[in-house]
Length: 174
Image 1 (cartoon, helix red, strand yellow):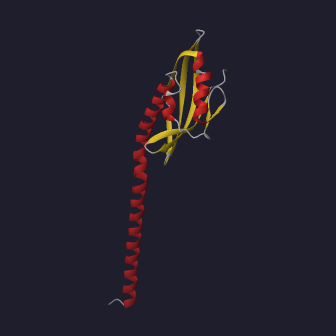
Image 2 (cartoon, helix red, strand yellow):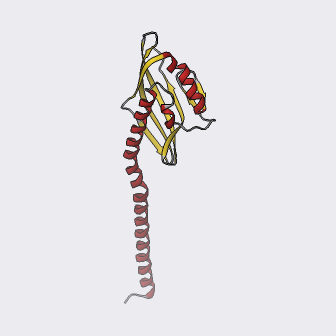
Image 3 (tube, helix red, strand yellow):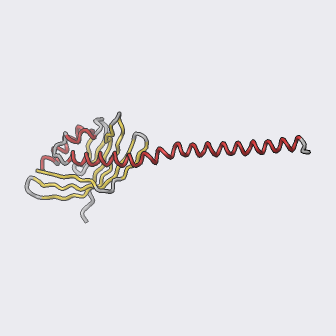
């Protein structure tokens, strides 16, 4: 017959295994809770931002700086880096500068995004990188082709993703 000390020891061992089993199940449940939404959100973000980037390119291809305005946050302290000039502070300055520096000198232009779009998202902030190509015809009849590197920082405000910063650059001719 087993002593009460041995029975108590056996009960403790079973309780310890139950506790470890519960802990393992809780850990597995937490992994499913946190990993599953991240895995599901990624394809959705890719589709969402592909549509945004393609719409962005079409808007800038219009030749009218009013058209792409819907893609930008209007805060005056935001900074946008472009090909020319170097920097704009706030959407208003960006709008006027592009209209004067770029659109005033071309008869047509087409901006297209490459297939290499990369989206990284953390909550209501996302950044996108993609190569772009700008093909323009200037008022003096020249055709200019420019490859562009693009980085956009987006913030979800309400139901919309808006650009709060962007950086465009062109590789130096080699």
